[in-house]
Length: 361
Image (tube, rainbow, N blue to C red; front, side, top):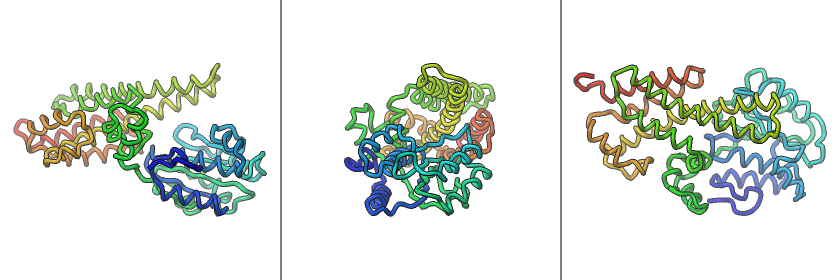
């Protein structure tokens, strides 16, 4: 369900977490630090902004409106510089947290806790343990495991789960999105990702490249290399669009803005490679459920016929094994391995898992 009224109006899903936060606001039982954890796109950042706006506004409707629009000096969202939140950024947060709010009831900081390196995390620990004044920290992370234990133990954990796909589909239909069932399924419980598939041509082109690659079981290295190139080209397009969008927010971008755009573009490209691996996993999962006689469970609802044809062509293929193989490839991204190398190795392993027992392969 969607929160229709109150602080979290418009937020989809995760009602228990929202109610807990609303009770804290209503009873003045707000913790000094929260850790919002869950997969990307399930609403953590949106909720943090709305919750933070309510905290700094202290019941002032005008201040709350300004805070929700990012115009309140006491609501600070610290974007990582590249892959990490730096110790310099954390020291600035600590300095601000030690002083009185500029004008609000509290000062609130939104930080990306799974981007802290050990030095940055250690710089924040004392402030998290013994906060001064009325500062509240909203820490965001894709998982609790991705946050250093010393940081996680000093914050109240709030879990955000994927939104049920039918609920996402109903929301999208209500907002006039075409192919709502398909983009909801592709989003895998993330409203944000579903909206990207609905709105961004580059994401749809990435999916097309993945489909083209996913069923091309060539023994030839050169063909696999070309297939990987098609996916990487689409990932580059996603990154270029993100970089361009970032710069459009500035009338005359200075060097700092251009550097920020480059970082945003790289993050988008890396995210697109991760999404390509997720789409390959989804494709082989669909092949597995179709092979098991349950096509109604397929996520790629517009291409079930195509997948059925591939399944008939390879009746002994280990589709589930192929999907599991990709999990190992996704883990390699955390170690800064070249995306090109990860994709080429993944396709090679998939070929062996699916067709390794076939004569001539």
